[in-house]
Length: 498
Image (cartoon, rainbow, N blue to C red):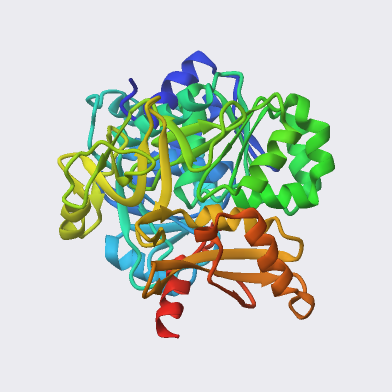
């Protein structure tokens, strides 16, 4: 096993020197060129005063040069800290101060925050250094297997309160890359298009998996430029896609014909970051009947820990089998391992070499969450007799109706199929008789024309009695995070106040 992603790139620069490693709309790097550019930039970082262990804040530029900077930090022994594209100065200031960063590199001018360098200028200046940057390459190659060096700190978006910094080691990044590569059956012939932001863990880790496997990763800045999206597919012979549920839904809406035309060349599609609705699954299965369609479960703390090919097997709540380096167990409220089933679910816990080192600057939170290498989650679920893992939902989101655990997604999937429902979210509502009952919030395409009575009749025809919402409230917009996750907590809090 490689000791780091940079070590994998170094080896692949020898195995596949002229093979394209990474490309975007403007340029491409072969593995030989990628290694050379990253090593040159690592030399530049040293002249800029960056020492091993220093943090470097990197504004996401969503291009091949951004991955050069990421790898350069690895070769130099620096800690890579991604920032969202055009992040606010307030957010950058908080992360800069929290990490004690040596500098910020990007294309938005953050010189008022701290020492700032423009990425294009850094690339230009780094050309002055020797081609090989041998000391950095050899230093990376010599790292001991299982190295726990902090390779990066991934900060959550922090929509409420202070964002959490999740410390990921070289060892964990390699294990996550293995989880992805083995999970999707990636090969050196894979050419994967990634339109997801590289400031977040999902898209970044897909890039690592491709570089780890000697494959080719093609970067796009979202999918709204449909012409460019398909032009990249044609130019580089893309045969794999990495999407979020939101982007998958958007492509089905605005670019279905293009997807149909390219369907024969797509070997697999991987989807993560949020819950994948059944309606989206069914559309993708119909569109890509011969492709492998993967849904990944995981968190920033324990990346890509479970995977399901839902074109081969699909069952409500199933997230598939544990990934290559992951192990799952179900525990009770006291964190004691238990025998679980659909009727007797417990809390999901995960372990494996892909685990984070901990939360940056928060030993207390780390101790609460990570115990002896086991990450304890708030997800309620069970493991079936075939070893497949099922998730009912977050503990606080699951509806406890007369002792029966109901996943809100079951109700949302049915509600979303009703004509006129733009988006919806189900949360538990206190009830003196049943304990909890479902409450459904929805946004409608035309609120003034929405027939709530007919909608409730539809739900009664398609849901079991305990799953029919006791109340339906129409609101302007369902709250979601930047990567499309439902923000149930906000609706639960509003429900408590009302």
